[in-house]
Length: 62
Image 1 (tube, helix red, strand yellow):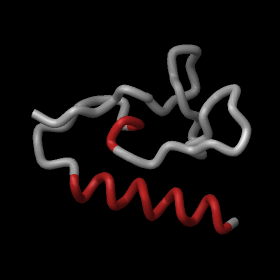
Image 2 (tube, helix red, strand yellow):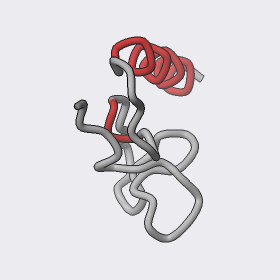
Image 3 (cartoon, helix red, strand yellow):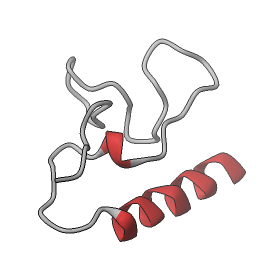
């Protein structure tokens, strides 16, 4: 079991972060870990978190 989805990504009112990993209502804060995954996966989250982090780096770099 791996904790994930506690700061879910999405476009609805229940999402904590938007599609660019920015926290709704807080300027300058992004989340880049397993908490943004909208659903829990049945495998190790390591590779998925690497991909999220790579995307976050691209978004921050512009």
